[in-house]
Image (cartoon, rainbow over all chains, first blue to last red):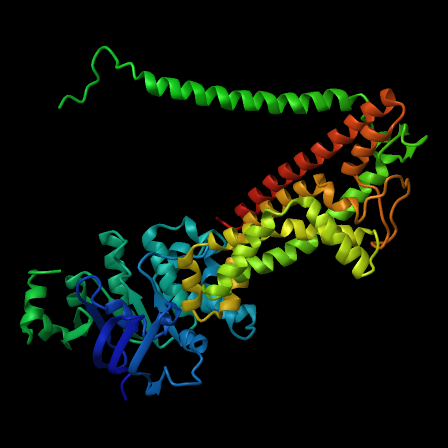
Amino acid sequence: MYKLQAQAVSVWYGTHQALFDVSLSLERNQILALIGPSGCGKSTFLRLFNRMNDFIPGFRLSGKVFIDGEDIYAPGVDPVLLRRRVGMVFQKPTPFPFSIYENIAYGLRLQNRLPEKLIRERVEQALQQAALWDEVKDKLKKSALSLSGGQQQRLCIARALATRPSLILMDEPTSALDPISTAKIEELLTDLKRSYTIVIVTHNMQQAARISDYTAFFKDGHLIECGRTKDFFTNPKEPETLRYITGRFG
Amino acid sequence: MPLRLPKKKPKRWGEKALTLVVATISWSMLIVLVGVIGFLAYQGGKVLSWAFLTTPMREGMQAGGIAPPLVGSLWVSTLALLIGAILGTATGAYLSEFSPKGRLHRLIELLVNTLAGVPSIVYGLFGLALFVVALGLGASILSGALTLSLLSLPILIRNAQEAFAGVSADLKLTSLGMGASPAQTFWRITLRLAFPRLITGYVLAMGRLLGETAPILFTVAAYYLPTYPRSPFEPTMMLPYHLYALITSGTNITQTYPMAFGTALVLVSLTLILTIAAAILRFRLKKRLHV
């Protein structure tokens, strides 16, 4: 069974069609990179999997989207419960203006009342997984806003991991960061792959080539090509993909 | 192009004239304001004392203190603020965070804006008709507080709307993305982060309520009642109306005149104290929130 699957998905915002008949599937514990020029629909596609597009007025969808074989747009599916199972990291770091500890605990406190001891364990685990524990273990009560940009983004990753999702969505998570922080996060993603499936939108083709197992190229709402990353960049099948990765447009 | 300024600076007369005019106007406004407060303090300071604040008036208002109207004013405006803050914050939250931005939304906004323009005496009349007569509450603290809370609603709604809308949309989305329901996001993120601004709005509204005269005339304020209210169903004296009474109804103006200024000084000081308290509270809340 595929971890996630899109079947003939088209998306409209009002009268504007943002995605055209996109079909794609991904196995578990893989990293899928979504690339393409601005406005090509890659973020829209990413946000299908935690139904964040539902918040945009005029959003409509045809086709089907599955996670673990379950149709997540079927009637009766609660998008709130879905989002608890899918972690999301945004382009800009979005720490809450609370303490580091409370940031990580936020998702855990949304669910049934967990004992504080368990929350503390999960916070430590999440920070360790996000390779941030050693830097913050002595200042968990300090404001999350006191961290550097790169640390804040790793905090956001830790926050997404704390609720133990099986799927993580990342929308250009390193585009606001410096090269060293970017390298740390890329290293982290390769580690996380062992326990998670990751879909990442990136502007940076080299990043896609470095970290992903599969790459999907979008243009004007169409999925042009999707394949194993090593073949995708060395031997693209579509002429438009070749033009994009050799830098002729976008 | 040379970036260095020429030796002889350009005169720029227009700019200088504008600065002069604007500065003069600002300073004269400040002088007027300080003058008013100074005059109040000078005149009112003559009668201001602990006894003035803590004892009732005597000899038909010609002597004694202002404790009953002071207590009455605090009672009524606190109760009014409590009612107004709950209703106003809830409405503001609905308009800013929950209502679909359609025709109903625009209609409510239009109504709120219209309410803000209604003269306060009209609120007084409405309060008289609805609370005092129709609901049978009589001239009472409750009637007055309900009337004043209606008057404060437009400000409190607008304030709440702005406070909630001012919370970063990214943070709200992040919370929703983590699987918080819209209600959880509202309680844990939006309300929490909007709190310092809400508080400021409450205090400013309270300051305005303390000084309102027209809405309390027919709904609560007693002309002469030198006792303290024991329940919200009783009428009470209040500072603005007491001030009016001191100035207009006394036969011994040399005695009541300074008392009127003392009353005014107390009224202004209350507002000032509230404003300062709000600033301190806001500062401390922000610090605790790491904002």
